[in-house]
Structures are given as structure tokens and as C-alpha cells.
Length: 104
Image (cartoon, rainbow, N blue to C red; front, side):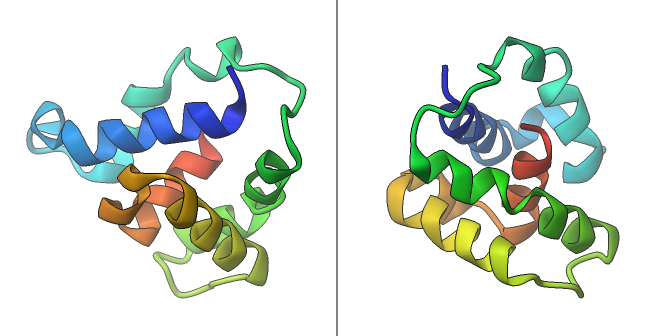
């Protein structure tokens, strides 16, 4: 399974499964939704498109840590890339997408 496919699956959890989070925030449910999943992902990239998302991990970390105040160019590119290629990404917030990128 490519990491990009994994990111899309995680996005589906954010968009479809908020009821599972209960009173928890999206940030804390992201950890629960992704625990153990990352280890099953392929360590090799399956396409150049996947690299766009992986290269944004540092920017995604800054975005999440700053509560959305720091927006790097690579993160912007990855957000655009995900939304152009995956319907679930259209319904997810920038913060949810950044958290999904970090979970890869």
C-alpha cells in the first residue's frame, strides 16, 4: 500500500468517523486512528506524486505545532495535491490533512 493511499484512508477516518472521537479533539483522535497503521505502509515510494506529500512532513509539523499559523510552501503544495486527487481531502480541513501527512 503506498503512503499516499494510506493518507487517503486516514482522511476518510477524519471525515467519516468524527463520532468515534467522542469528546476528544481531532488532534488526539488522529493518534488513535493511526497507531500501528504506519508500520504496515511501504517504506518505498510508489510514485513521484507520493514524494510531494512526504516532502511536506516538516512543514506539516510546523503547521500543527503552531496551530495553523506557520504555512510552508511544501505543505501548501501537498494540500493542493491531495485535494486535486482525492475526494475525501476536499472535506478535510488543512489541520486534518497536515495531521494525516504527519501520520505517514
